[in-house]
Each structure stands twice: as structure tokens, then as C-alpha cells.
Image 1 (spheres, each protein chain N blue to C red):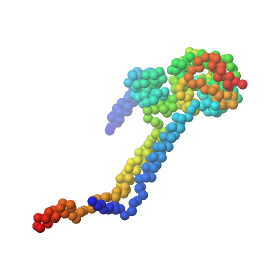
Image 2 (image 1 turned 90 degrees about the horizontal axis):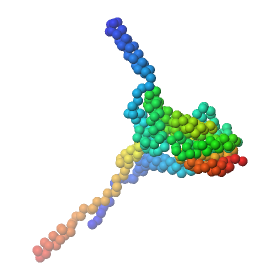
Image 3 (image 1 turned 30 degrees about the vertical axis):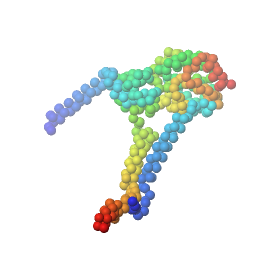
Image 4 (image 1 turned 180 degrees about the horizontal axis):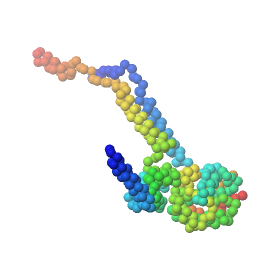
Amino acid sequence: MTTTSIPASSERQRPVWTIPAIVVVVLVLGLLAYGLRLRGLGQVNQAPAPDFTLQTFDGQMITLAALKGKPVVLNFWASWCKPCEDEAPMLEAASQKYPGVVFLGAAYVDTEGASRAYLERFKITYPNGPDLGSRMADAYRVRGVPETFFIGADGVVQAVKVGPLLSSNELDDLLSKIIE
Amino acid sequence: MNRQMWQIVIFVMVVGFGWVNVSRAQGPQQVTRDDVNVVARELYCPTCSGIPVSTCGIPVCEQMREVIAEKLAAGESKEQIKGYFVEQFGQKVLAQPDQRGVNLVLAWLLPGAVLGASLLAGFLWLRHRAPAQLTVPAVSTTTDYDERLERELQRLES
């Protein structure tokens, strides 16, 4: 059996729909790549500590930039976090033991009343404030609480403890990395 | 409307306005769980994903519901309470992203643009696609059957 080809049109035109289709694909792929990049970023460690402004519960404004030249311990905690309760007395004791180190606490996703009650309960005296809008936690890429950053006098994160500090010896070891 | 009618209307308005103000000033309002859930449904758990505060059982959600109840009792509106939680915990607590700034672009305009571009691409593809080369069988002038019939007739005649 023979076949006959019938030309459908005189000349094949360049499809008009390709441009919006390419735009859609590029946008979707771009968003996916951005999301994957953000997810892939690890914790901030051995890198300059992101600057922040912490407004403490007693109204004090503290910026990391203003603390340059001093070692800083930045602890992320929450009143609803049980492991945070275990390390709270240790951190308070260390803040008394090492007056040359600036201890700061950032309440992560916590309500103000509960945060204040927690600080009172554990008699925390070093500056603490809410991490408003989770901006600090986002900048430090905190995955959960507790998480503690040990920032050297040069403003570089020297060590990170993910999860609760297990003993005062462990805390001393970590502090030795930022105390000259 | 005569003067007496106007006086009555003004009297009713003044009394009504006064009653509303008195009722507002009567201290903390009674807040039910349903009232709390109306707000809590529009907020998401900030430490877990995809769970509204109204149904979430973890401590932070319980704290949030308590704060919502306190704020409702203090006379704050739903929008004010949502704004408070955004300020405290960030945009991630909102069930629907805010329609301002970067969120307006990323969460509202961009998906709309992608959807619009997809529809446009689909429409243009349907409208402008070049019809495929049509391949049709050539029409045979003689078929096998005709040839066979012819042969048979010739055989009978001979």
C-alpha cells in the first residue's frame, strides 16, 4: 500500500508559546534552587558571627558589633524546652565564673510571660531577650533549642553546641576555645 | 422629617453610642475556646510544620493559645494579635503570607505570574501548534478484490 504526504502548512512557524513556557520553567527552577541552597547551608561555625541586635527583657539594646574584642556566648533557649532547663543553671554559673565573657540568651519562639517566668525560676542574671521575628535564629541557622554559639573576641564563631550542654566540664572546654 | 423626629433619632444614636462604650469599658470580656480558635486557626505552629495553633498540642502552641485568650480578653482584634505573633516569631506563623513587601512578590504575585504564564503558554500552544504532517493512505484505483474478480470473470468466459 502506498502513502501520500500532504503538507499541513506552507512553512512551520516558531511556536509562540515557548517564551512564556521557558519563563515558567526558569522561575520554578530558580525558586527550587534557592530553596535547596538555603536548606543545604549548614550551621554557622568557624565563620564570622552574624551581627544582631538583642533587646533584652529589661529594655537594654545589645549589638554583637559593639561587643567586638570580647568573647561572647550566645545561647538560644525557650521556656517550653525541657533540655534547656538542664543547662540553664550551668550557663548562669559559668557567667559568674567567667566575668570576661559576655553571656547572652535569646528566647526562641517563646511568649514573653513564659520567658520571664523561666528566667526568674532559674535566677538567670546575664542579659536575655526575645529573638524577635526569629531573626537571630535565622541568621545563625538554628535548627532547634538549645543551641549555643561560642564567639571569639575577633567575632568568629569558634564552636557550636547543638543540644544541651551535658556538664560544666564540657562548657569549660568550649569556653577555652574563646578565652585567650 | 420634622424637628421632633430628628430629636428622637439623635437621642437613639447618643444612647446607642453610650451603651457600646459602656459595654467596651466593662473590663475583660468572656473569651471562649471557640473565640481563641478563630484566631489560632490563622496561625501556624512556629516549631513544627503545617499544624495550625488551634489543633497543635505542643507547649509553644498551648502558650500561644493562652496569649491569644489574654489578648482577646483585653479587647485586641484578630489582626492585632496576628501582628503581635508575626513580630515575635516571624512571618512563618501566618497561615497565609502577608500581602506586603517580599511576601507580596514571592507568595502572591510570583505564583500568580507562573499560573498566568502557564495558561498563556497552553493557550498559545493550542492555538498556534502546527498541524502534524498528515499521512493518509493513497486511494487505490484498483483493489486486490477487483483484480481477482476480473481474473475470475475472464476465466469463466474463456
